[in-house]
Image (cartoon, rainbow, N blue to C red; front, side, top):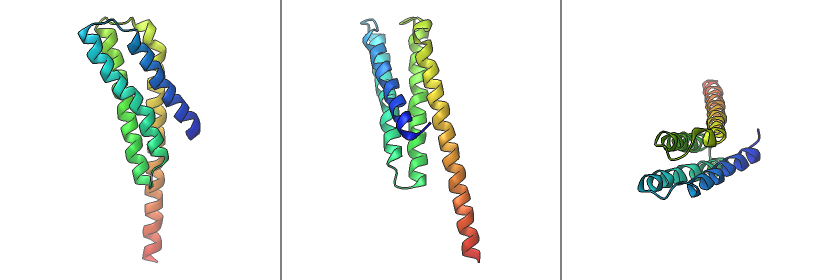
Length: 130
């Protein structure tokens, strides 16, 4: 998956979470959980877009890590909504699966970037010794 596809996918995740929040009951609990979900879910795509504009490999790794944290946090709030009885699990199953997939994709991207950075640092060290 290329960066543009992942930008679209993370944005759609945020938009889908917005729609979930709009359908929650009008209770204090739903309001609190909904606000938390809105913050984390919309942050996933924003932080990934920022990572795509990173100034360095280290900056990319840092910003992707934030995206991963926000996606995982979004999953937490979705789970809380189900377990608090605010929405049925089957209604959120596809969205939670998408969240899991986004976490996995971002994690793999981060691991690849870390490997490439280590390889680059190792090669630089070898060149400096010569």
